[in-house]
Length: 438
Image 1 (cartoon, rainbow, N blue to C red):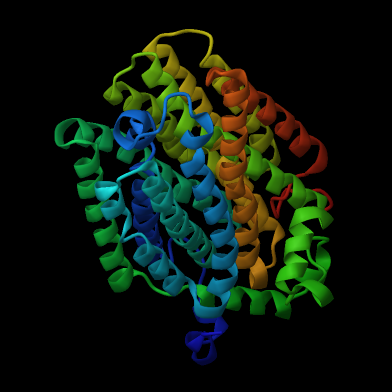
Image 2 (cartoon, rainbow, N blue to C red; image 1 turned 180 degrees about the vertical axis):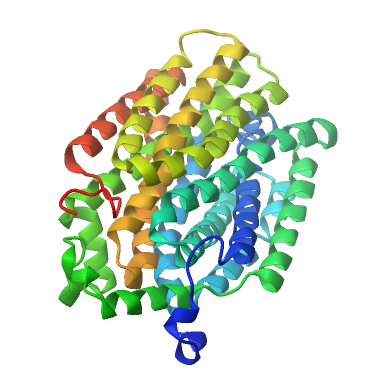
């Protein structure tokens, strides 16, 4: 494990908090914004023009969803790897590897002779997102206080999903002006090149803060005063111990992990089904960009409020409310056929995502010991982003069996409703100052 600073600098010098670490916190916000831009460049133009530009046969719903399936399973697996790897080689190196993996993506889109190249490009995108987004989140949690986790996650996800929304809108205009391939190539090359330079020059390693926090907890009685951690077993657990704890042994963590997986059904729906569904109804590419962009923008900006809100009222209620509000927003899309209504429905769905999204991550951070928080976040993100793949497969199958993309919306609305019920029943409040039995 590479931790040169922790051996030469006292624990007291690693002060945690946004104000104390504002410069590095800001750099990490810029990083996640660039990560969002990279993801967003494939979310509007590519699925809308899959048939006309990339040769996907009409009505091939399973083939259409293949690129999101590939993205989800790769990103999920790499989240798991990134979390553990970051505790061995540090956060910055993992972030840099993630950006290097993205370099071929714009070229693959520009020269793609078939849909298979787009699927391959999204495999690299999954690698990039699994390493980069995970590290921006983990690094911020390293340098901020426990009572700032909701705000930290809100700011992180706000920056990232505002980037996703902006990219979807900008690339729709670039595609109209330069053509879809050249527009995406120019946009992607600028974003990825900028991110590589900023990572290499400005981003600092933050793992020493996490180790300093772990040492402070070990020196205090706090670990023995809570049921969250078994001090003798879980201060230095194996990867398998953490995985089993989060996947089936700890009911609270299981509830959060399944909610993370199911909520990605919504994002897969917006990514692959919304553009194709709206384009099939005669909506222009630019208007599709605004509908999808509204979802991402409301999701992103609202997290400035919803993340901070959970620091005051807890994580549990916003998560459950968010799951059910997403179910309502998705179902509303089918009730009318006007662009303004689709935009309004997308905004409702985006606000539901804002309620649940940062607070699922904050809840995991509440429950995980600092010594294995990076791994825990990676495992949560593994289960969460596997939801892209499972959701896209399910959407493709439902649409194929029914012959209509609209059936996928009903499927996702029902899944979110049931998942919210599971969180309400299985989980509990995790906030350090508000949890039961404190």
